[in-house]
Amino acid sequence: MNRFFFFFFYSRTFARQGVCVSRSQYTVFYRHAAPMGTTAKEEMNKFWAKNAQLNRPMSPHITIYKWSVPMMMSITHRGTGVGLSGAISAVALAALVLPGSYPYYLDMIHSLYLGPCLIALAKFGIAFPVSFHTLNGVRHLYWDIGKGFKIPQVYKTGYTVIGLSILTSAALMFI
Image 1 (cartoon, rainbow, N blue to C red):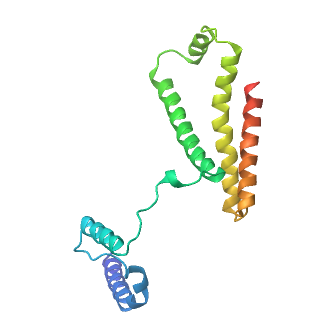
Image 2 (cartoon, rainbow, N blue to C red):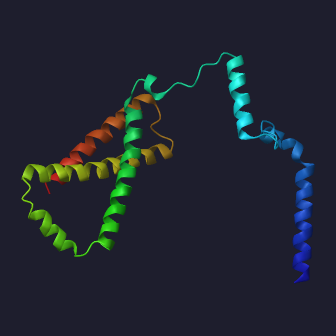
Image 3 (tube, rainbow, N blue to C red):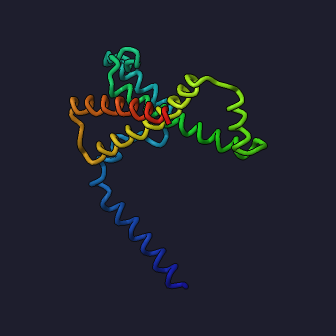
């Protein structure tokens, strides 16, 4: 037992000394770090003073950008992910908290006598986020292997995902 602590203590000490001895080669990584004595507010003030001195403009807001398909698809992908997570959580919480069972609530919805158009619209509203998020996720997996990054390919796959999402949602709507 004592040998273990002896080995652990000395290996840690020698490792630290080795890091300290060879630290000069890693100065690139911490050369631009703020000194430990400064606060975030002081660093922020230095940043804005430097930008004012160099006449740099403020960072542009999203409203000045021209909207594009990749931008909208990114926003929609994030929105559908958040919406689906929230919906699944709400349904799970409702299943735990509300009295009754699934057939009871299904019968309650049927008793509302909603028209077929409204039911089809609700089905599409449920199916579209699922199909879009899934198909756009496949698109992201395609990007993860390093393919499809050229601008024409980004637009082509974007329009493909939108089209397939609408077709898939329409097909699921008629089930």
